Each structure stands twice: as structure tokens, then as C-alpha cells.
Amino acid sequence: MPPISAADTAGASDLAPKRLTLNAEVIACGLPGTLMPGWAKGAYVERPCFGETGGVPEGLRVVGAYDDQQLADLIAYINSTFRKNFQE
Image (tube, rainbow, N blue to C red; front, top):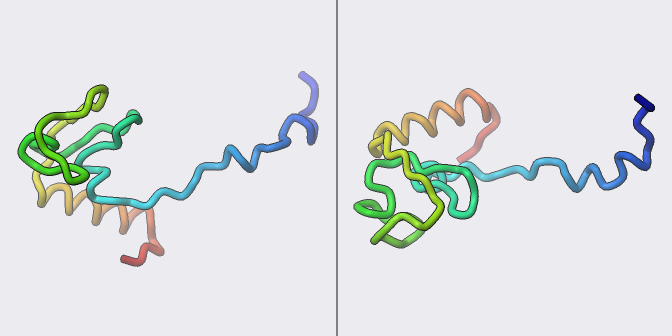
């Protein structure tokens, strides 16, 4: 296999992951249009998500595994474990 040249990596910085803001609503409700599922019990049906209730958007999966306290604990864990310099 030939070595990688500068031409092969041109534009690679455009592919670098963008820093995402950890948002409780994204974890709770998922992110429509992506593979990120919703984890909150009652997301979109009993619990408003992105200002809406009524039904889960087409193509979005809601696992519904966590209540509000469990979601808060999960976010605290993510912040303290993986985002050591996190500032609220």
C-alpha cells in the first residue's frame, strides 16, 4: 500500500468532529434526523421535546429508559467523567 500523501489528506480538517454542546433535551428526546435516540420516559408523548408534544417524529427512536432524576444523574456522570473542564 502506498504512503498517504498531502493530497490524500487535503480537506481533512473539514472532517474533524465538531464540538457538540451537551444538552439535556438532546439526551432526553433524541435528535431528529440522526441516529441519536431519545432516552426519556414519555418523550414527545407525555414530556415536551423541543417545545412539542403529540407524537414521536418519524424515524426517531425513543428508548424511554430513564425518568428525570436518572437523566440528571446520567448528565452529571458524563460531565464529571468525560468533560472534566465542563463549565455550566
